[in-house]
Image 1 (cartoon, rainbow, N blue to C red):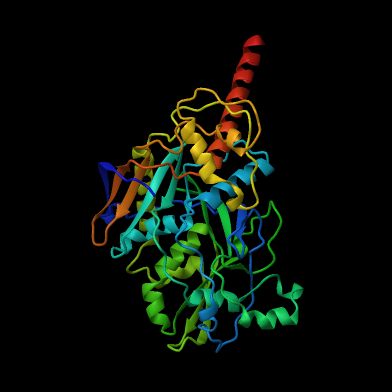
Image 2: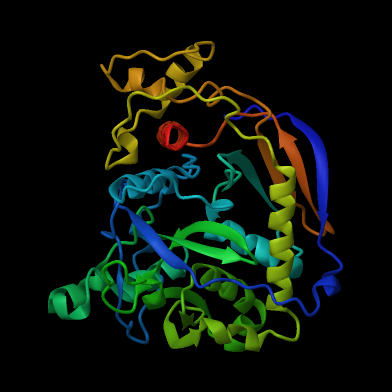
Amino acid sequence: MFNLIFVALEVFPIEPLEQFEGCTPVYQQPVELFCFSYDEHRGLRYDASSLKYYYPAVLGADLSQGFEERIERDETIDEHLDGFLLSLCAYERIHGRTRTSVDILTWRGILARFLCTPYDRRTSWSVHLMRFQDTLFIEDCHVSPLPLTTREALMSLSTLPDTWDKCSREQIERRYDTVVNNNVQYCAAVRTKLDGITLLIAGEVDCTWDAKPSPPENPVPLYVELKTAFANRAVFERNKLFKTWAQSYLLGVPRVIVGFRTEDGLLAEVKTYETHALLSHVRRSRDGLRALAWTAALLRFLRKNCTDDVLAKTLPVENQLDISSNINEVNTEKIKETIIDNISKTAIPTDNTDIVSSATSVTSATASSLALVWRLSYTSGDTVVRLERVKTQCFLHPYFISHRTQTNNRIVEKDIIAIADAVNI
């Protein structure tokens, strides 16, 4: 539980949007760096094991079937950015990357919320921000999400565990008997730029149109977003398309498949939309370029004002924690206790007896330091978003900080050696 104390306040105006008239912000085609999956027990896997493959559902299918048996995720657990950050660590180690440097790291849903705010003034939201090694990390303030919807049912009816030619007839036909499990997710992490601001964003991908290609080919153009809506297509296009565009566009997903349902929950129609064409349905009331320009300006505002690094001082690192294949195997509480116990220490033990001794490599500022977090919030009907300094605990996963601190020290050591060699020459 965070102990919140609010101090200092900055505001960023939403209006006038006319100031962005004629702006043409560039959003770079997203390229997938890595992916990760959650299994049926919410175990984290650094692979594409939970990726589903699109296979059209039969019209007339009951989208409410099986809701009584559905399995919902335990939403009392605040996962923060943990799965995203641990997967990034795995990616950097597997590929020998020193550090993936970006200006902003966050979930796709958070960035989509920013993008929609100029035209959605009824939805309140709040996020936490933290700066570490010159990257701004943004996470949701933990709230209980909405319950399962017919979208999850459509995902079960419209997807297969593999490409259709590799699935048995029984697998294809029995997908209608599949119990919806909200623990299972496949996520893609993509690198992109918005008006020169480098971004690493991750988001859930519903399914893929065809077999996922091997690196270095970018799989994003094959991804598919699934949506459900009531059978009145005009209402959907008027009220929901802008948000749908934002979610798909930011991750680079090129097509959205919408299942329109009757009041009884039966699938009445399936329509495919091309993401790049979605705005043509709402252009009179919502301008995508203005929304992108406003979002870019907001991100610059955050980069300018959220300046203090979570780790002002770092300790040397001699041992590195092993990355587990399951997030639950990383003893976060034990690590945090060790960090707190070592706050006043200026050196770390050299033994490598267990995860706790290695955990002292996490720097002194991590788990108990205050005044390192900001809260950005919007209240329904307001004309500004508000940025407040929050005195609370660090929300970055301890292992991620340990991994990055060690990586940073290696970079510094290499620089020192290079300078020394140059001087000797």
